[in-house]
Amino acid sequence: MSVVPSTSPNFKANVKEALADEQLQNALANIKNGFVRNRRIASERLAEFEALRDQARDIKTHTIEHLDVYLEIYQQNVEASGGQVHWAMDEVEARKIILEICQNADAKTVTKGKTMIGEEIGINEYLEENGIEPIETDLGEYIIQLRGEMPSHIIAPATHVSKEQVADAFKETHTELDADRSLEDADDLLAEARAMLRDKFIQADVGITGANFLIAETGSSVIVTNEGNGDLTQTLPKVHIALASIEKVVPTLEDVTTLLRVLARSATGQEISSYTTFSTGPRRATDLDGPEEYHVVIVDNGRTEMLAGDFSEMLRCIRCGACMNHCPVYNAVGGHAYGWVYPGPMGAVLTPGLMGLDEAAHLPQASTLCGKCEEVCPVRIPLPTLLRRWRDQVYARDLSDWMTKWGLKYWAMFAKRPALYNFLANPKMRLLAWWAKKHGHLKSIPTLKGWTENRNFPAPEGKTFHQLWKERK
Image (cartoon, rainbow, N blue to C red; front, side, top):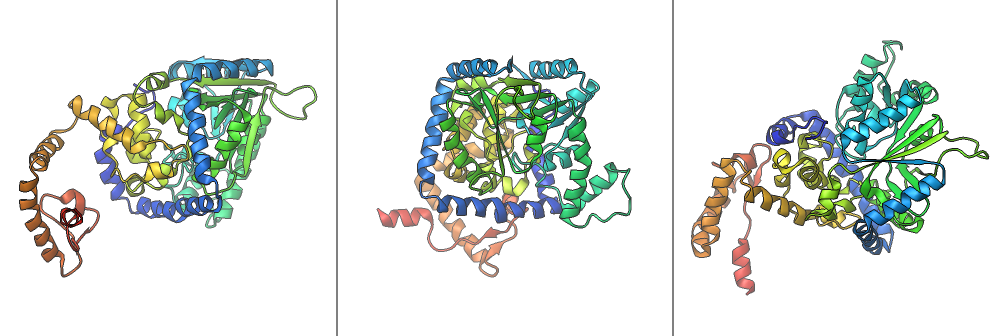
């Protein structure tokens, strides 16, 4: 069981709450207008984009098949550059290692860059419990830290928050500033966050960042950001801790350049992010800046078990967020409905693997299996296939609720008898078409409230699939 609280077992209740949240629904509309459009334009502009996806898939597949070798090479090269590597089997070990490093540095404040593995191990709460103040420096993470929330998206953690809600959070927290100040414009909010964080950067004793990649060949950690906070977090404090999970390692610098070319385009539609920073060891005598100590904490936390099972392909994920940006379920309910750190299709596969299927049995059902997630994944993870594998296990272990079990048995009775199915389905389709003829859609259908409670059901048009298939044959 994770140390980070989870509401994944309450997924259905979370969904109802999300669908009824008008502000959230307005915020989710921006994803389609931004990330989705920008990814399409960026991918179409690069002729070799699909070939790069193949290369990226092959790089990650090769790496996870030889993970022990590359992790060992990585450790050797980190230590050769003067850094230290720490291994943690689970979140408890990882938290203790980080706390010990901070205590050895006599740290009072810690600045943090965005790190999903940091969310996974609950490092902020743990540091606070032990008298150390963690300060999120990514603007989105800073906002949700003030609001006491989890990220709702892996690259845009505050995408669910409106400008007005950000202003309210700033006024509630930044009480030393003029209470009557104007925070109506986004630029005003940005300027205030920058001013409040500037002193934190300077005062911090330790800086913690995530790592998009760990390069075995050079012993470097790589972070990809669109804000300068990551560089300030790494270079100003006397101690830098890079926090990563085991699958972040890649063999060579050349491999990283390939992955970077698909990462930014898939995530935000950029050719490359504003900042792509490589860190290799502590400051040397000839360096103008950098930390005195460089630590890398590498966390397993269930990934070795996934590596040996049927879901190892999920470890190819480079955390771009494209799958959730294009997912109709995520775009309807947002990230918090998934109940833990990782939302969307990647979360629906990864969370059961890390937390256990008993805790997250609902999540693999949160998919239409439309295949869009696989279509846009930069490393071609077969997400629909993996979701079906989890569904098979849910069924085999009898983890479904009674209504789902009854519904599947009822459906199977007709699906196994095509003649009976067609005999009953055809008149129903004609009835629905007649019923919806006046408005072109249906606002309610008996026994199908789940389909119509938050959307209109379109009227059947033309011939059924079975009719068209019969004609084609």
